[in-house]
Image 1 (cartoon, one colour):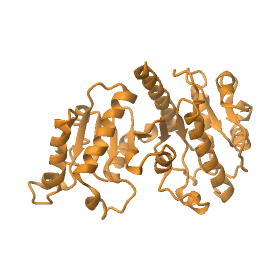
Image 2 (cartoon, one colour; image 1 turned 45 degrees about the vertical axis):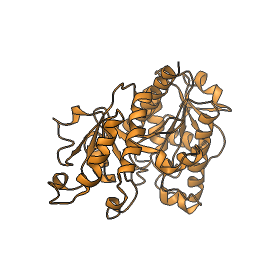
Image 3 (spheres, rainbow, N blue to C red; image 1 turned 90 degrees about the vertical axis):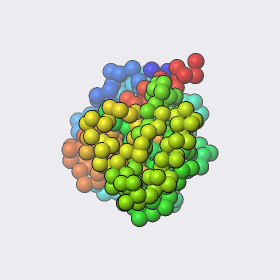
Image 4 (tube, rainbow, N blue to C red; image 1 turned 180 degrees about the vertical axis):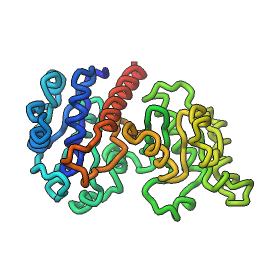
Length: 335
């Protein structure tokens, strides 16, 4: 345990965020790592009453009260709120989601929380109220004073970690964005984060190919020989344990997965499909390279099942646990 509670943002209150947060509390209430939710007390209380857990929500006035309150119920920092309307997103809910996200990060930056765990938001709903970032990751980079490329998205589960080198762009654009500089820059961030936040002394980074069979010696494309292989050699020269290019159809086979600590992939779906296929209910979105710790469940708002009792809290539980473990690792490395 890091000594400070984790701050949890509520996400879009019309999605499954409130349900999985309450579900995570029920599962983790006896754990050593306390957490509190920023805003949405009425939303969480209404959600809890609908599920029979309303009496487990406790209002707190400041983050410092969270640890003591955690044993009695889910601490919620009172402030911005909304009406609980599962499956029916609106501007009021988006405003709460944004407030909760911003204030959760603020709590960490002020030293009142050890890390932030973000519940799922709707990018389209946030855009309607003026949020002009592609996602929460880019927002966090900006708030922390970093360029977007300095915040690296990693998807992590019990047996697999993947990093998309290009993220929210059209697939047709991805090849033109891949460069030796990009690969080296993001691989260095991943290497440093695995050491600092995950306690891996000598990280092994598998670098994927872009084309079928990694280009087949130029027959199906030359990015592997022209860009990716030189980047790998440059990383090795810097003492980073990178290898590849590994063909995408071989990278995630059972025999291959134990050979690396993280797989760096050339485009979004190359990284996300294996995580969601293999570890959907335990997949965690981790932002590397930030001065703060941030994790999130690796799934969306699921408006279609919100309020139906079908939401699985597994990924939120995993995100909270991982944030706590990362905070503990950082504390040890700082000693």
